[in-house]
Length: 498
Image 1 (tube, one colour):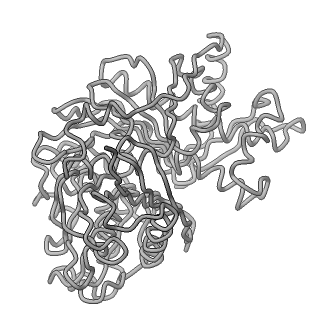
Image 2 (image 1 turned 180 degrees about the vertical axis):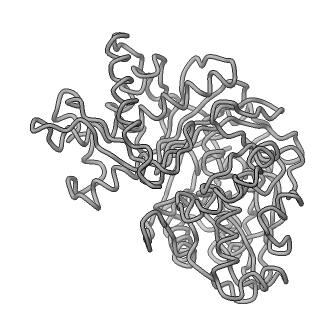
């Protein structure tokens, strides 16, 4: 008999709660966007208190839509934007500052300073991550140094650090009234403070980044009962937590070595399962924890992170106004037969994997009087595919395996135009599932596994459903021409921020 599970998906642009049956079918969901705050060029912040208010609202709305109560749910999971950093008062629950978002670049000077000390190789060896403004450690360091009194409070444990999963879990389990201060191992692996092999906070890294241990949450597995919820979910076991990309990996049932998925969300995140031994990349990729389920051995992944994908569509909507709603982008892109030799490099926060160029900035290249907004829209969609091709090539070289197909999910994966172009560029099939938003589903799977709704990973894999398979048909010479032009545009984007 199918049981009900819940999952809170706290993303970069919105917060969503789903109610789903254990076979994977979503029966209700509610979603609410939150503000994007840009205090300076390159700075991106969120109001963590607003996010928590939205979380409570969407939980109540989804339960009402499903016409169920909390007691009907077997368990609840949480998934979240990963490196985004929150520091809050343990006694009041008030954030001490806006959350610093993963794509924020304010810590680039600190990256350069630590790199100049020759510590980059040590950090990568311990964490699988290069020195970059992307990760949480330097964001937390900035908060401790810039918010008056924050460092003293953190050293006493009176201020608590967490990625968004920690913030949500603490509030869901009671907040100032006994909330659990913990972090799932996948999110901990994105702080650049956790040792990737021991899955513990690393004392040497804490010294390098000058982080007091007293403010850090307890590291837990991705699938275990953390405690009972309060509020609208009162009494429901909170039993699963993963960073969004890790949740999507589980939601796609990428549980075998060589399985790869790409999530097209605010950014693009391509992960490949590499098994129980971490593989340090030599091609500019990240080594990260794929998941740790209960007491089982941890599973690792290679990851290529692309900062801007769906966010570029949002930018065309909000900043340029060439579309009124994001869903209009495909129709506008289809208004032209091709990109008109226009290329959009969306390096708004620099370029992430595999280049890691913080000095890059966004450009549109190849414009002529012939170009129109249709060409710009098409170039914006194609940018996600070009960047994915580059990451996938690095991943195949690192792992030493070819992929049989690329599994895809996320909002932009609904674009047939983009998915066909993606298959053409990587010269491999692209497989789209029947359910596009798999981050919440993956978190629900983890929670269900912890409470016995699912007996094994095979049980979870049995619920995955393919919707469409896109096969490549682009001539090799056309593929080579497009890639060469894209590479030329990328070179023009480098060196803008000095």
